[in-house]
Length: 221
Image (cartoon, rainbow, N blue to C red; front, side, top):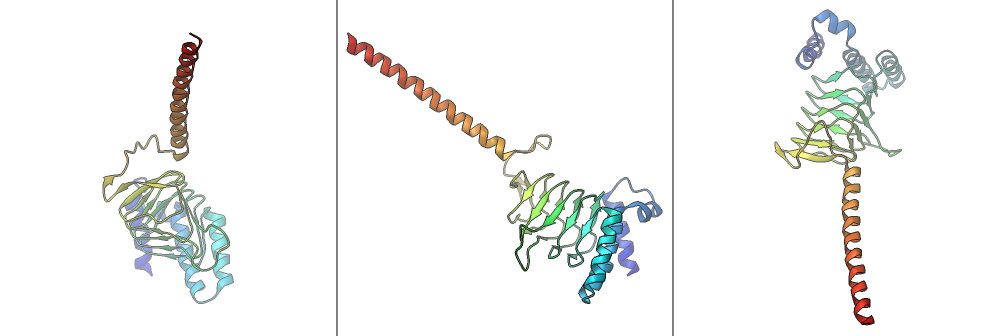
């Protein structure tokens, strides 16, 4: 147990350059507190002490701003950076060395039964405000961009961005150029496509009008 606790602390130093001392990390890192509370709640949950497990989960939520259902399965070296607003659902399965940032939701899409929350494989990173919804799989080494809404499986070694999220990097190769200061917006892109089509139609209509005017002029002669 103490080995696991030490490992949880060490991952904070690995991931957060602002961490200065063990005392600071132990006393002030809400993500670490939420993970420790979850480990206790999950152990009780597995032994069918559901009510006590849920109470611990809700107390942790009150103090940390992070809600992790006691049924969620979380691997080793899980790191929650800042963490306010993070929600992790009951049937989530999270691998090792996974990092999530504030505002991330690993949730369901409705009232479906059974496995209804995401599976996040080893070494994945989910950036600020991303929403990963449904019984989908986030592959190993995948990165989810800030604010992305992910509703489908993400291949391993991929980067996805946007609403709805789409792959922009796969196996280290850019599928589409990405400027991190100007994240792709599929809705805006669609409007641009429509604007282009409208301009084409206007040009075609103008040409047709000119041809009709010429034909009418010739017929009058």
